[in-house]
Amino acid sequence: MAEAFGDYEELAAGVLPADVRDFVAGGSGSETTLRLNRSALDSVTLTPRVLAEVAEASLRCGLVGGSAAMPVVVAPMAYQRLLHPEGELLLARAAAAAGIPYVISTLSSYPLEKIAGTGPSWFQLYWLRDRAMVESLVDRAGAAGCGALMVTVDVPVMGRRLRDVRNSFSLPPDVVAANLVDAVSEAHVGVPGLSAVAAHTASAFEPAVSWRDLEWLKARTELPLLVKGILDPRDAIRAVEIGADGIVVSNHGGRQLDGAVASVNALPSVVDAVGKECSVLLDSGIRSGTDVLRALALGASGVLVGRPLLWALAVDACDEALALLRKELVDAMLLAGCANVADAARLTTGRA
Image 1: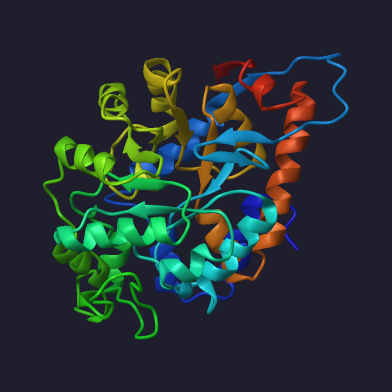
Image 2 (image 1 turned 30 degrees about the vertical axis):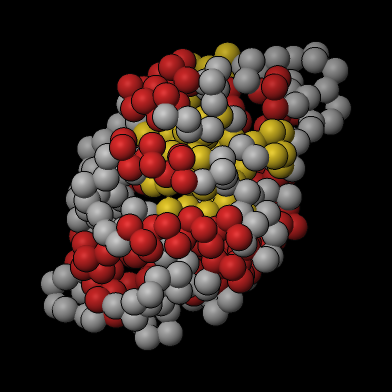
């Protein structure tokens, strides 16, 4: 059993092949932004309030499309059967048990309908070259009961992830992009010195997505719309202007533009720009309950959590991991004098 939410990476290292570990852990380029996400979060300091008469902390909060048992969303992550045979189904069930949304990836290794049936879920959309396929995915998400649509906008092309290139990484035959017509694709064809997953992305994803496409999408669906991958407040303002219900401040976990600003450093300016008009979530680098509290104190409505839950999935400990994250957040809030999520937003922050 792990003692801290961040312990699962070490536990997973004992059961996963090296190339799969690298696929999950790696960032793009020299991994500068990957490291910066962590150091930037570590530098955020909180000033606790004392004698606040807080004996219990309530984590219940409002998120896009409803409420949640804590201000945490399971981030969209591809090909989870790489980590465990039940993949997305196991992690989605754990999210449902924890009372939080699970975001289904376009590149999930089980069909979105099967995952959505396990509990409250949102659907994450990558923009595909095939517009008919985009329409089909949006319709399927609505029909499956997904509570929101999250479109990822920071992948015109996949960042050059050198660990995958050096490993000539490709998917095993039994792990497919189950939501796509060409489920068996370039992603399964290993080529020395190349990432097969990147090759598949290059052929399937539309690089020239524009704000006009998001306007079309907003008109095409009645689902609440979140835009993931925003770092510049000017882009956040534009997203709100076209009707976005939520912004996810994210650098894709350091997997896209290497050298991009740390997500937590971009968060305050985005909150200042649009925080009164829509929900703002933080993604990239969350590793503890204290990190969640840091994000709340900086104005986020909640956070997306990714890699730590994949590591927990690898060792069949998803329920345990989410319970541990909840305990860490409760402890942090009590120590900071916060009775609820709104109190956390009033904490004073600084930089170490």
